[in-house]
Image (cartoon, rainbow, N blue to C red; front, side):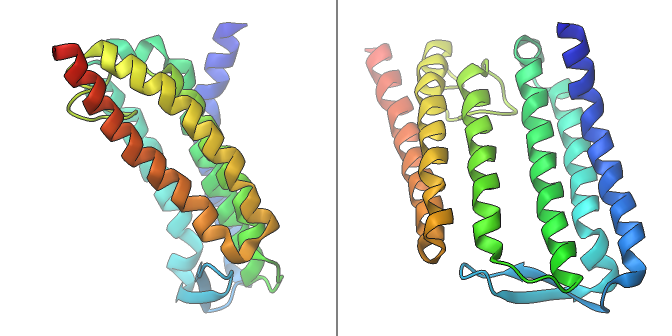
Length: 216
């Protein structure tokens, strides 16, 4: 069963990338010459691209992202540690690509003429993304690829473990708070990013403090 899950987690990413490219090729003839590709915090379209890159920018980014996630763990100096939480790492890759595919779907729908509250539809998926990030962070072993990589977590395995155990819980809490952005889209930007910035700054300081205590 574990091998089946691991196999699926390895196959799903490339399938998601292929779905994005196929969707792009199917949609391309029916899209406008100038496509909306950026929205402000009020959910208003305020940026655009030409038809080709407006259609295929997201699939290309997904392909590059998949390639990077495929290569980096192989050259990480602590790649043996990544193998210890490889299933969670693969889950992170799948989640990132699902998020980008969903975002791409919203872009295509908008340019087909559908109108909706972009922020309200995006917020729940961002919350889901960061909840999974919290899960992966909480289980990550010391490595140079993914996690809370400060000089102090990378210098001490015990500092890494303590920082990531707390960081995993905090990112999950941030994800729950983010859901409030769907209820009040007007303040979604602040509800999304203030907790994340606060958590990141706190964890950097936390890793330094416990490293200092450990050294003493």
